[in-house]
Image 1: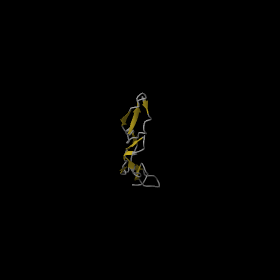
Image 2: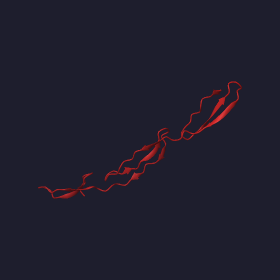
Image 3: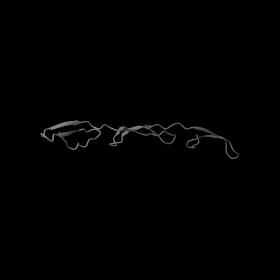
Image 4: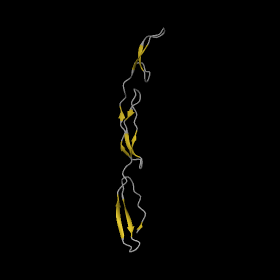
Length: 102
């Protein structure tokens, strides 16, 4: 039996393989399924009080398709921190992440 080269399979496209008998020459076609996506997680990031975050997404390592789009996350709240009074400054409150005065 002679097996001809398989067609190039992709994540979404299957193919047909043809096998031929070396004795009688009869051929047979065999359907080949698509490979399917090789899912990987596209890591998101947490929001801060200055930068919006992103949710995790899902992509395919084989064909680079985006299977689940990342979505933007809202800004987080400031993290309050008390600023102690000094000789030259009065006490106050600022964000411990971005250091903005609140």
